[in-house]
Amino acid sequence: MEKYGPETYGDLFACVYDEWYGDDGNVALTIMGNPDVVAEKILSLAEDGPVLELGIGSGRLALPIAKRGLDITGVDASEAMLDLLRAKPGSEAVTLIKGDMIDPPGLEPETFSLILVGFNTFFNLPSQKDQESCIAAVKRLLKPGGRFVIEAFVPDPKTHDGFSIRSIEVDRILADAVLIDEEKQTITGQRIEMTSSGNRLFPYFLRYAYPSQLDEMATKVGLSLEHRWEDWLDSPFTEESGVHISVWKKN
Image (cartoon, rainbow, N blue to C red; front, side):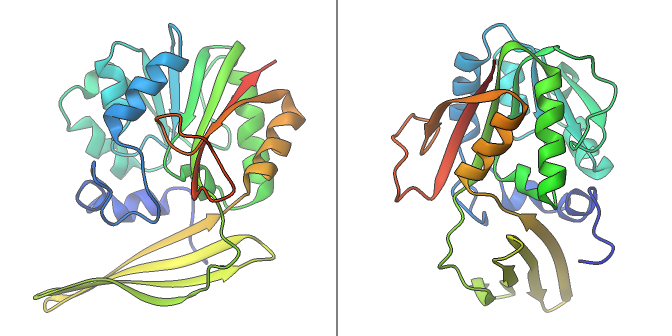
């Protein structure tokens, strides 16, 4: 997608993000973890912290994590998203850094006990090379024995591209136009909001990876798979699971 950069998603979605992707995730592409449930799980995995969240967005996960007493830093490429977070109660407890999660700036090696990438955000990295660079940076920033946690959908090869309607209301239609490239493992989409006062376009671009591919990237830099669940409540991951929570540990 031309002119689509690391900050594009956040800059364009910031005005609707909390409305569309709040606690219930009613416009989400896939099922997303409840923030309080996620925070409790991170608390159990992070030991004493500190925690780093890549793609922190509006703080949907970071604020509940900070509320539980963990020292948390967040990185995001979108100033609009960071501004949205800064305006929320409790945001002063979160250290915010503007930057690309391919190589988060200004952070010391072996600082964090846990690094989190929630709700498919890892797939916003547009290529395998960028994803590998991010995981290499994660390994560098983790303390020995630290954990890397990803929440992401499991790609479905039966999924087809096209046009779909998400909701029809009296004064509003919400739709998706999607192109999937199975060879490149990319999803190019536009979420379209149509109203009597005009239309708005919300573009997104994802480079998805299968759990086995994520394992290969993690193993390559010295991270080993510790857990894989279907959800944040430790439900077993199976061949039928549409979402996975994966935890790798620094060797």
